[in-house]
Image 1 (cartoon, rainbow, N blue to C red):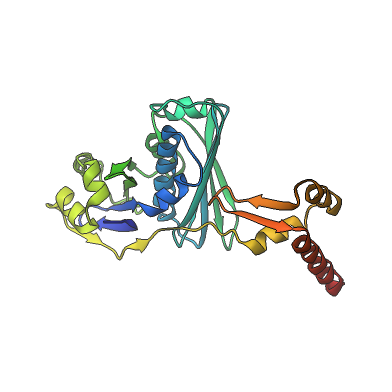
Image 2: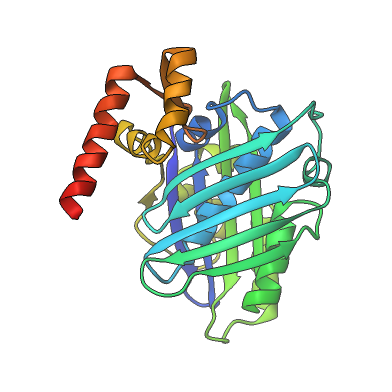
Length: 291
């Protein structure tokens, strides 16, 4: 079974809401764009699950970007998602990374930047210290400090029958202030029992029944999650004409063509001398029209 879906749910009697995300193809697309070390693949999966869970909490149309930066072997790991659950991501690293490397081993002295960009309204950016043993704990601290909402997050990555899987769950006290600490702890204990294979393979209704069969759970319609890069030949051509023409000519003279590579999806767009001349001619014609 292939999963690329986000499910939202809430507990009718306990003032707690939840989310369940299961990602197969979207995760596989991101980690296949480069030959990422195993530990970095895992970190990208955790970042992907986290971003998808956070986009589900957005109260506006727009996007969220979660970006890890540091001075360790991994200088950058970033996932971008929006309210339509279109996601993409990439990481940059140097040197060898041990298979069991932790987030601190990879990032060194670093931090997490969370950027919210509504289509309408002001952009918000929060910088989060890497305090915790893993990304889930770091984000739980973020919610406790910035949102003042009790939140628990479970993130799992792995393989089933040779296929990479990433999945996660989130439970959070409703912001209306009616939730009790005892109710939340009860649900934490139940959710803690979830097994990797259950998270990776079960349909949402079956998984939630196994975990919470004594509770009244309302499961909302699922939202599909998909990898979406957004790059295109047209956009790459538009980027080329922003480069100084003399510099472009030098590249053409040396290589015979000019190429732009998309880090997000691994696609390379190449243009020969005739195509480059046409791009600049169209750009100049457009500029003249504007004047």
